[in-house]
Length: 256
Image 1: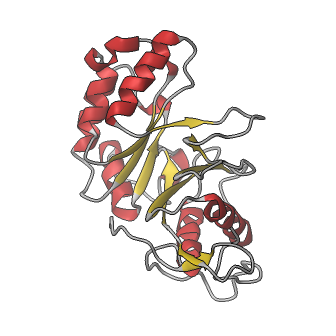
Image 2: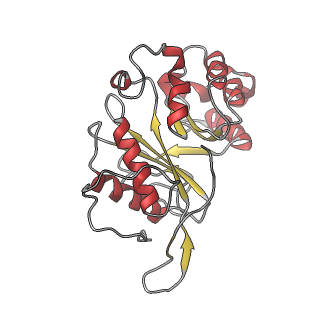
Image 3: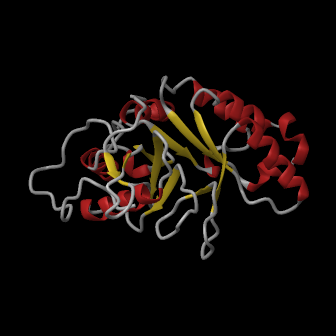
């Protein structure tokens, strides 16, 4: 796990003849405490405190949602740190309460929580600042970690925002978030989503694409997304999709 680097190639532009390396797309889920995963990813008798380690043994990245932090975020993060292997990637989304501290955020539990996860932390998703104090807290976070924002629904994304389906991000985004309406998605749908993400990705070695769904995205859907990334030349070697799976007309090169 955690093998980092670009793979494959795509046209820089239609008819230009110029090629660029595709980033490696690391696929992950939003959250890991999903009830349907008991028996699907986690053995039925697996203790709850072992679930994160089990998830990290199967996948390479995780989006930590705001609800996961609880009332004691620093203690919670210190516990998670003991379950994460080298090379694992985290994107941590903070709740609005994290920015209320303003310039004092470095003395708050949220800062200690992020520091505990620093070896694995690839980006912090922060709420949009609502006042100057929260903006000051965001600036302090950005001095220590890459800070990303979720583009408000119905508004255009901006550089540094988290990419979501249907949103164009000027300059590209290195983190994507795909909310699915159902736990499972057809390979054809997944391929279209991965291609759309690759089309706007900047020229970097590695990007992260996370999937979310009511009740938690199905494990098979995550595995299928990993396979599709590999087939497109943007992923590590993983098991192929079952024979006869319809992913639509195959194109090795993602449209820019």
